[in-house]
Length: 219
Image: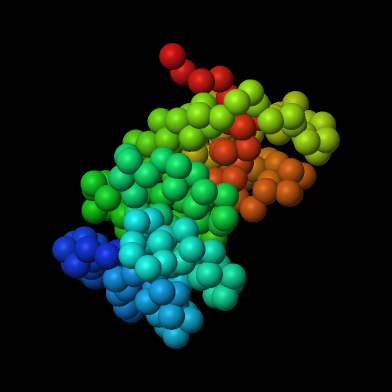
């Protein structure tokens, strides 16, 4: 089964570039395009794509509004933000409302296809080029760390370690290497962390870790 993708960007050249990258992939099918947020929501309702690649700066209804509507009305659809370095604040809000991660518009073609596949699988993806930079910029712009919720006390010492490494943007394989554990064990720990803290996915875990002071800023 092909992964059905909707492209939402107000620039025709960007949509054409995304299509050019994705169409050769044997497991990905571009099923539609949208030039603003209203069209993106309508197309998502009609086409029921697996993944929407969403630009945040669009006329009439921006990407944030479109993301909210798509996730509310099409629960089986995942949204991946396609962003630039200048959209930090918007990216943070997109992650809060349910986007399954972000990828840079200048990312290598294989990275874009990977983002689609990861989102469609139900996981979340943070572009490694910007994970630390974007999340740190988003969170450092706020005041002191938010008081940790009581649920944090439910985590075991190992689960706190895993959460801290997730917050640094490490993959399951990288966490396994750092803690000398099997990847299956790490996946189990990740699932327990998300469940105990009431987090939807890995993206929320990264933001949570920074906001609650569980990851030390670099520099």
